[in-house]
Image 1 (cartoon, rainbow, N blue to C red):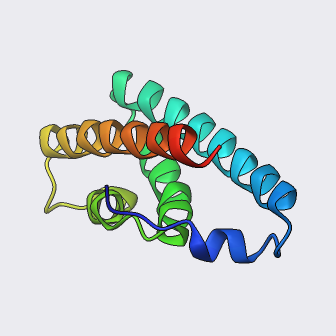
Image 2: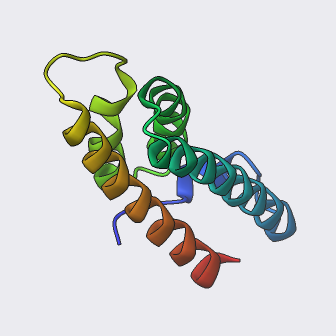
Length: 111
């Protein structure tokens, strides 16, 4: 599993309870975005999926989840002619699966 929550937790300070609250908020927000992203992928709505990918890119850069960010970078560009719709949605589904895996890992090991 390739990610690190250290930078994220630094914002909360040294108190473990504050860190837990921040991490819980992070996971909840990321899960909401991932759910919206999946809905847009399932609806073949590339434009909306691009907007959500852009938001999620920042989120997953915070925790240095490079596998996810590598998949999201090309997805944030609406209408990129280098990425066909079929590849876009394929990358999107791969990114979504990886997001779910990382968030589950965080919940199991850090919350």
